[in-house]
Image (tube, rainbow, N blue to C red):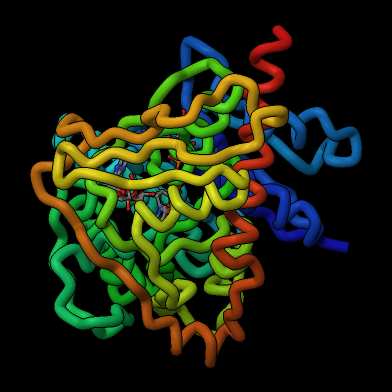
Length: 360
Ligand code: NAP
Ligand code: G4F
């Protein structure tokens, strides 16, 4: 039996690790591209690498989206059926600090991959998935954003991903590569990068509970997002490439919550009562009731959330919510994990991580 071969860029990231697990279960041979780092950056995939049943099924290659030679070399050697381009400088806030680098990696990096497919003579064999994003909608032009909603990017990150979106379409039309964009809304998990807001909250609260920190500083807590679970979303990335033709799809839960709601629901899950007071940069949340036996490090009136100017962006995307009708109809998209299950999974994992930190 001939197994399908996939290359995943960004294998060490949140989505790369979940997709690798998903494809291996589907009997794919998975090749991940990871970049050289001076410290370990493989914690999300170590369990796969060490799993004996994936010996000769899971391979890692050093490569970088900015090094087209490395990409061509790996693609030529593997001759993959599918490439999933997840690698990116993916933090919107950081993209304002590193606009040039972000643009190089996210825009030119994507072009380098597409050109490598062509240069290796694989344009009629290798399918290409581009990790596009709801950030493309930025200053929203429609209440719910679908594949037809005009884009209005508001950060160097979003602008760089707009180039990547169009160059993917361009290579589809020019060279008939099966190249598709998944326009994914925010998706989170216990493997989410620690500086994205949901993970920052679940880590922050876990550390406060374990007495490792006193207070969590956040930026714009009134920002609205459509949050799903990364495990659900990577399955859709695969489905996008199994569709009968290359196309672009919005993947979203179609439900919207504020950052403040996410904080409230985390505290609710922990059975800790908080009260919000103040306005703007002076807004804060303090603890008003909790189980003293369960949480010996907490105190009544302890201020646990503060607002800090540091975490506001020069240009904010205030409001995103998807319209995923096309994916529901054509790809049978239906999210399995809701926000409360997501919060439970993330809180439980980070409480355990903090507990282990204390025991060290
Ligand atoms: P992530 O956790 O930040 O992972 C990004 C990955 O890209 C990491 O493996 C990182 O390697 C790698 N990378 C960065 N620069 C690279 C370079 N120059 N060459 C090779 N690899 C490089 O991101 P994610 O949340 O999994 O998201 C996956 C993709 O989907 C990203 O493209 C993101 O922009 C996009 N996206 C994400 C969401 C979301 O809500 N998560 C929504 C829409 C779109 P290191 O581990 O070495 O840093
Ligand atoms: O968690 P975030 O940093 O995610 P953001 O900016 O929505 O971007 C993520 O989702 C995109 C899909 O729409 C991806 F393309 C992108 O790669 C990334 O995965 O911030 C969410 C919201 C923002 O409005 C931000 O201003 O939360 C607000 N926020 C409030 N306080 C904060 C904080 N964000 C961060 N990171 N840290 C804070 O302290």
